Image (cartoon, rainbow, N blue to C red; front, top):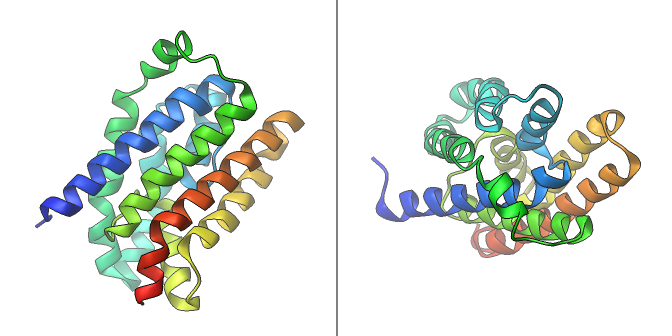
Length: 197
């Protein structure tokens, strides 16, 4: 059963991830890393709902967690389902916020990355996540004793690099800026957790 603190962390983190994505990244066609980045690529190319794409892309990693670290499976399943639902429910923010926010693409990539990274970091701090590469990052960070934010940054860079063939040089640069600020925010949120381990 979920504790109130963990449920609050999942809800807060999911709201931040959805807000950062829909208010800052999607209006400028900026990519993020990890499963969210893959889901954004699918959304940009085919118009598929981002939350649904996140769930589908996370299935292989959840199968891995089921066999190798079942506690991560259970602690991340709620995060994945709630964040994906909120992500798709928040889709109207893309159009509404575009009328109110007049931010340059560089500003959007920095703010979007920081807001999304903070949401991910809050969830990881309370030992939950959206699954996907966050889940993989938890495996690697625990095994190598490296801050999970650093691992997420590396994995995100791989996704952005692979997605680079689908985007312009400007979008690639903005996406790299997004994952850098996102990794920084996640690392700051989880720093105390790693220091205690």
